[in-house]
Amino acid sequence: MPEVRFHRSLYAAEVVLQAAEAFGQLARISVEENEHDVKLTLDEVHPHFEGRLADELANYVLQGTIQAARS
Amino acid sequence: MELKYTLDERSVRFPVDESLFALDAIYGAAYLFVDRCYVWLDRPEDGVVAVRLRTKGEADEAALDALAGEFANELLNQALRQRVGDANKKLREYTLAKAFFSHTKATSIDALLAELDAEELEEDPLEIEVPWDSPDA
Image 1 (cartoon, chains in turn brown, green):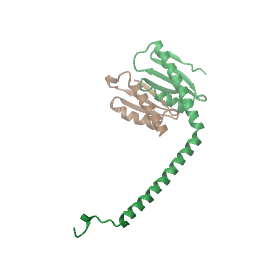
Image 2: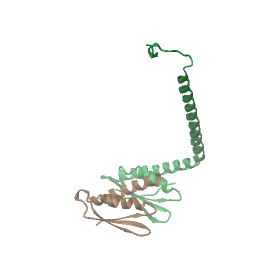
Image 3: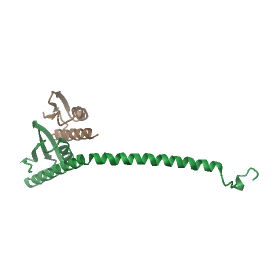
Image 4: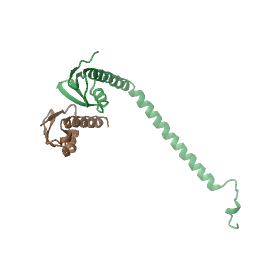
């Protein structure tokens, strides 16, 4: 059950939440938020993406955050 | 200035001091590596961004060292671009404003000339009648 944390000072929280929804087709994703970060827990990951879904999610969130910061 | 990094399986980790490299420079460098690597950012302490690059495929130590070097160079490049951008900000704004102003003026003159042309055509000052346009033709 991989857990990934996105620190609020580095990642846009709204992009993390949007990613959780978008990646919801590939895993069951639960979201927990606190003042420092947004934590996503990935369960029932699609077998095809086992072992790399968290990494793909990280890139997706990073790209979205950078694009949001520069627009 | 030397960026220290550590290697582990398929990964390079950098602690980046934000007083030396602004977050925007870190973003800029990270963005260029997302096609080859999985890029993770973390905040181990205030003023420090931990960057982790994880290769998408297998990578030996030499490849990871090379990746670390490329990232360090790109980080410097991004920081430099940002400084040059900041230094030239006023000049850039002035040039842009001037270009915009000139463009607006040119457009108005064009519009006035077009108006004049249209009016002259209506008046037909030379009174050249084309036979096939004549009502008797």
